[in-house]
Image (tube, rainbow, N blue to C red; front, side, top):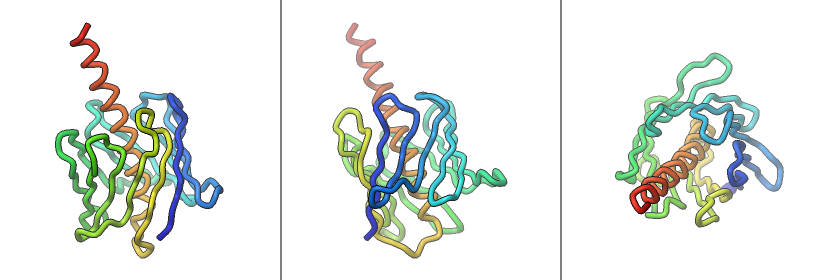
Length: 166
């Protein structure tokens, strides 16, 4: 098993990924609510994008802008599918608080994400149980991008609740 640590400052637009205290990746949004981000992991560059309604996430190769994958996130369904290189991966949100989520392949967990902060969700860990998948970098970045979407969903939900109460 490989273990990575990710962190994103509260109300910041940059998320970093580290292995053994050394930064190996970054996701950089234009601003806090930006729908586009540039990402680098292990020296490979990617473009990340979400649609206006927060549910469709896309990842592309930054070198040639070739699409690599698209996933639809539904806040009311804890599972979503992604097809990469002809393989079907399943993203599962593992708890109500959305602080634990995982990528599965053939029913087996490959990558497990954990958010260590209750409300801010600004740091956590990534446990990787597979080393033989060429899709690992894409799955890690999409998993972290999904995390950002979950935080935006929670902020939107909180805003709606506040508007209703006021």
